[in-house]
Image (tube, rainbow, N blue to C red; front, top):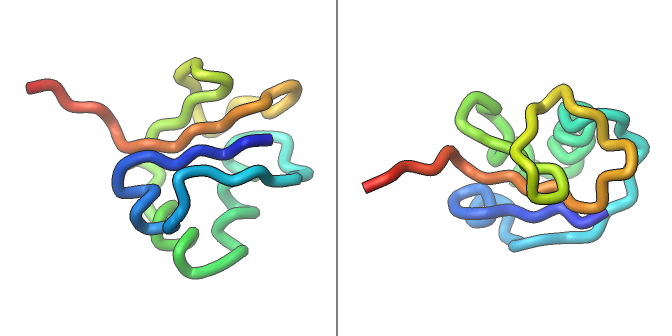
Length: 81
């Protein structure tokens, strides 16, 4: 599956996107797998309340199933102005 990172998430991880193989069943399990990789992932996912997630370009939550999902995107909440 493709995992995309936006804004400061991308800056902390150092990649705009990557293709990964995962056994995670939910978004939160995927986050735990990523956090276990390296410190940069740990830093990016340290506070999940400061993040949003979209599955196949649909806003979702961290307990959502990854079954059939092709793309996961992580980004900070959007603000208007």
